[in-house]
Image (cartoon, rainbow, N blue to C red):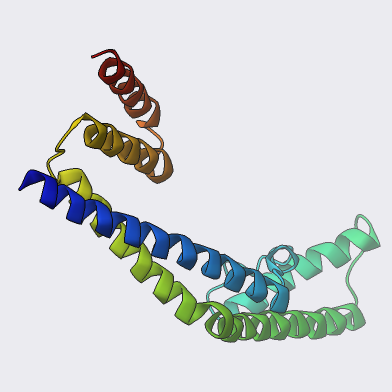
Amino acid sequence: MIRNTWNAALAEYRREETDYAASAAEYEAQCQRYYEAHPDRSKEFAAYGLIAARGRADAIRTALLHLCHMHGAAKGDGAKLTDSDLREINAEADRIVDDYFADRESGKEAFERFIGAGERKHDRAVDKMHEAREALLLAPAPDAEAMLLKLDILAAYVREADGEDADHIASIRDDAHRLFREA
């Protein structure tokens, strides 16, 4: 009975492990196509403080502050901005903010086109892999080899998931491998 439970859990784990690996590779390729189609411009927009902007009015205000500072600094200490400078700054702020919001919208569209469905599919593969790993770790180990495999899987998971206890788990795994070999 224990052997059958273990074999079923291990077969399901291996199946989900294979599906997960394929899904991860496909998802990585989709992400690469997304970044090729929609390059990251966050640094460009961060220069104007737009990344944290809450709505268009906030973005305009933020861009104007940055642009006034940049134009004032370019003119030198004590120099005043002229009406012409202010009109130019307002037009530039409008253009930058329009570009920012257009980029965000095209980013959403590109994300859905290149990644959206793939991300949801990958999330399902992650969930199934997690469930299969949990079932395997909870299944009774029928022998020492199975017990060592459970420790290997647990150690790999902890290293990937949080890493905080990874060294402790790896040390316990290494001890178990050594002790079972000596027995």
